[in-house]
Amino acid sequence: MIKHFKKLLGVIIAILIVVSSFSPAVVKADTIYDIPTGDSSTMVKGVSFDGVSYDAYVPSFSWTYAWRVLELVNNERAKVGLPGLVMDYDLCTVATGRAAETTVLFDHTRPNGESCFSCFPSVQGYIGENLAAGYRTPEAVVDGWMNSPGHRANILRKEFRSIGIGLVIADDRYGYYCAQSFGDTVDTVVTYSGTSYGGVDYSSIFNYSYYLTKNPDVKKSCQYSRKDSFSVIKHFLNYGMAEGRATTSSFNVSIYKENYPDLQKAYGNDLKKYYLHYMNYGKKEGRNATSIIKAPTSYGGVNYSAVYDYNYYIKNNPDVKKAFGGDKTATLKHFVNYGMAEGRRAKASFDVKSYRLKYGDLRLSFGKDLKKYYLHYINYGQKEGRIATGVTTLQNPVTKLNGVNYSAVYDYNYYIKMNPDVKRVYGQDDVAVLKHFVNYGMAEGRQAKATFNINVYMKQSDLKKAFGKDKKKYYLHYINFGKKEGRKAY
Image (cartoon, rainbow, N blue to C red; front, top):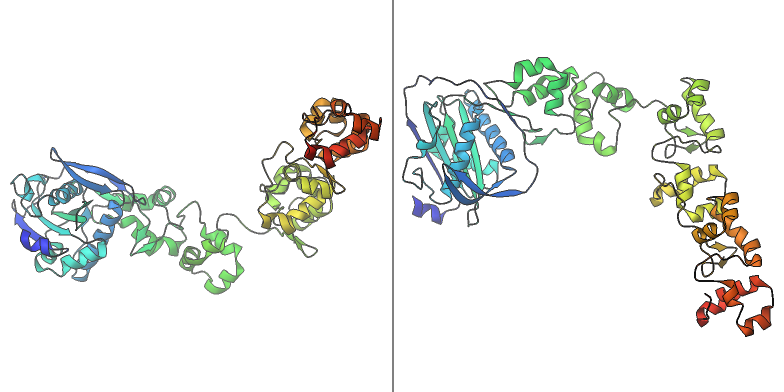
């Protein structure tokens, strides 16, 4: 059999033996485990089992693999009228260890010469084992087992009630090694807390912990079921959606229904369809399923939603809330006619003060006309990906005015530092500060940059002869010629 395995990819073996009478052994007190599916490709190398370490990997997605195998196995049992198997934690430990052992010896005899059943929990009566190698997907491995009489017999054995499923990956031609360990006793129950079932991912509308917290009756009846590890997600699929139950913090079916008349027209009171619509389309479309959408954002043909949110506006402007109460249309009109000009914040993602401080080109164009900053963001800034929050200090100070770049002789931060009277008058208005420098500072000989000192530059005889005491001309000469000529300026 080992020789045959080496020739064929994915050969499988099955065996069942009775190690006690049919009567189940004494069951220990239940230990309940909630094991979610994994979603990472990270693998931990080194499997230790029964005091021996094996050079194999336990992938973090092994629980995903195991749960899907269990689902497929239970589908096969259901076809012949058998109850589903329950995932048992101790048997999963056995199965993972046996999968690691088969990377060394692919047989029901363990590498130490003992029977595979020597490592099973003593509480089990009827026990069995299926092995497989080379099957990369749960669907493939279950299909392989079901097409082999011995393995099929184990999967459909009526005496079995529990199962453990293990997966390891070895660095050889077969790679994937999977083991099923069967038992007739449910000892340490594992409940499925993932979001996928039947090959469908319900994570956008279902969260295991949230569902149980918000629905204590479900928790009481399903979470610790000794009959079905999938009882919670099955309840959600068979009853929870149709009943409109709370399933995750990111989706509220009542809100979703109220927000969208097009869905009301299509689905009426069939709540399950709203869940499925959000999962298949609504989330991708950016539909709101957590808060009521009622307040208008358009006025006078302009959509202000990029800079305006009704709830945020009234929360952060209590005088507006007091004046207009719940009149959402009047509140929007106030924002358009007064709020923007006053620089009021109406949305978490747009702060006109930050927007103005961030962009010198906008300050040069709009000055102190705050409404223009809002409109610029609506029409251009948002599409351009401009930053509109979190800026508390002036950035990108302007250095150009009327087509002239004064950066060779001017630095905003240096100018206000060296000229506190200018800072006191104009503060963070960098356009006004530059204008002061151009209109007065140069003529007065004020220093505006560490690398240009007018007194040093004026000592050059040819310039002194040409410009005399007209200090502004010295600045302009350096901008246009002196810097390029490498003249000494400090």
